[in-house]
Image (tube, rainbow, N blue to C red; front, top):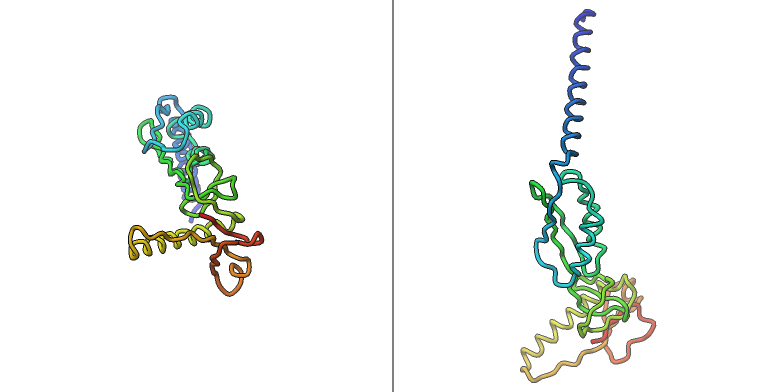
Length: 204
């Protein structure tokens, strides 16, 4: 390859790179223009538990930028810090709106008298005036205790359906012992006096 041809190819390459940089600068400048303001934040469904004032506070104080530059991940995390919020989905809705979908916790029981546990067996911090079953245990036992409770409820409903509506099914205390959780298998123990040394248990 002769020298003039090599110089021509080099010039073409440099021109292409320069053009890309110019285009990038134009796009970057355009998306930061005030002609793309974020006008609205729309909730996909009305929340049942989440305080509307807390949602408004996040919209006013946490959202930064315009339609293109707003931080969707940061917005999602801000909403997920609210009590009763389990998961959040945030997406842009052209030309100037954000759609926010909140999944709220559904409380199944109280947890150690201080927190709540949801139907997925996840412990979360919130206040509830509902009369709920009382679960006792360490945080890493919540999912297992929830499964035990749900299995018990299914068995109780089946027994009532088979034995008649007037037949009552006693509600035992269930617990998972450390040996059962970490040994050969997982088991449940039912009785009226659950030991204080048990790692996970529930009372209904």
